[in-house]
Length: 175
Image 1: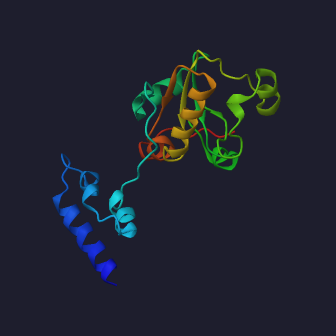
Image 2: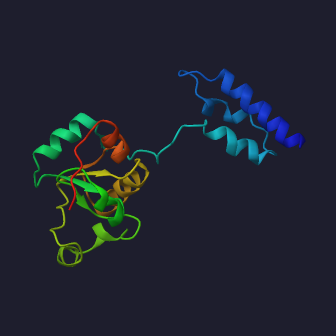
Image 3: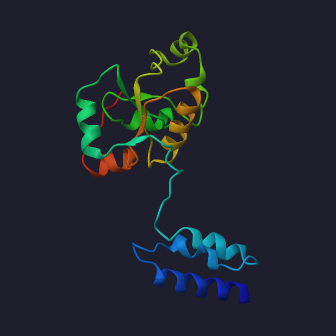
């Protein structure tokens, strides 16, 4: 009980000191090492969703940019939805292809012929810009990291992903 009280007191003290210029994470070093619950609680303020660290060199797109790209598809710029097929079936960004990262994490590692057999469309070339999105931006960050590992050099993310697309009134395509 004492640990719970001290953890709550620390969180309240930390949150009151936090400002946009001094986020809560700045104060993590003040957490006593013997208090793992306080460390877990203080790392992420309530209501804030953190993504994986963006990969270096990855471009991050906003809604208006992705909306323009979806209107004029190109073989040099491919929008990739990494949600599961059931999520994709409910609606996706027009011109996006579906490569489910959770059930098919090896997709970009496949040889071109096997990729086309499995997914029914050509594998994006390694020099094409690949723009990943998912539901909220977490899986898309993981997919972007995998794409870098396999040799894609022009990797981008739509960090707002499907939730941002729907919130901004983006058109939902359906198969």
